[in-house]
Image (cartoon, rainbow, N blue to C red):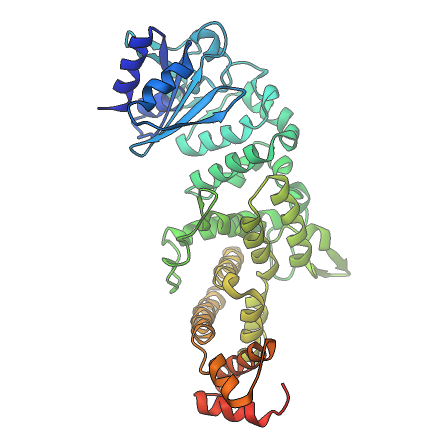
Length: 453
């Protein structure tokens, strides 16, 4: 039996009103599939939930203050809440945008559209239901950006003015809400334009620190574009890479299987691609005709961490993104220097499992730079270097996972104990990577000949 029919049957038995509201109707009208169904009921919500649970639909209380119950049923997310206000008309008038202020009565199959949301859907207009809606909840600015990206809507002028006026209040919203809405924007942004859109709406500077400042600097020996433009271009380059529109011989299938707090790892890498040069304004230095940004990766990591903490990013995501911002210059440094093997080893040891993501970010960074220059030959060379660097990392990883010598071998041969065992293994792994050791026997000879370790 369909979940809507189950709920409708329960409403009839309890003699209460129930309405499908919000995004499910909007998506249905646009002929887009939606797995989120919001139901607003007039009364007896606890009795309704109990009756539905007797049908083996398990709910949990999502918000006690707002009386929101949530269930996962056949891959659909069902939210049930009580109507806000005296009736469904008052409820709809309190909602954020007109396209979300539509209801469908489950009693008489009637569509309710007091804010003319259907007309706005047809005209692709995103409009607030009242001039105070953004002031009441500035997080709606982020939600609005997501709807612009998802449906190709255009803001009406009053809503656009509200976005600009109240964007400064986003920082006062709850961290967990900022995180979810911001990451939903990244998730929805298949064309890689979200930061450009936020910039055009004049809200980006209130969301990402130093956005306005980074527009004023960045042009130097290596860039003819400002820093913010380069950050946006690098982000878009990564999105194109993930869609297969930019060629790079790296197998990413195993790299992006992990999720952090409901979002795939690739979206956190996308954000790191944007944030990678965020420290440039702080590090801008001009002496004569020479412009430098020394240590911008270090300052950038600090700024990124502050932003991520302010938006309530999980610690694991914070560590991932901050390491990518910190390490994004390392591959280019290796590319421009000699003694590659030793630099490779130092890089791999420092960043460990973050390494392949830094490699991809570095390629996108250099590729984005090349789009503003006639550097086709250089990007060909750098692509080849990046692919080799990734292959070298896989070789390094294989050695770390399968060392030529074991702890048992070291105890038997040298009588080593405790941390001395790991120090010896690390030494042999390093020499194996540098091709100075080929097998266990060579390793044992080195250990025996070193005396004290």
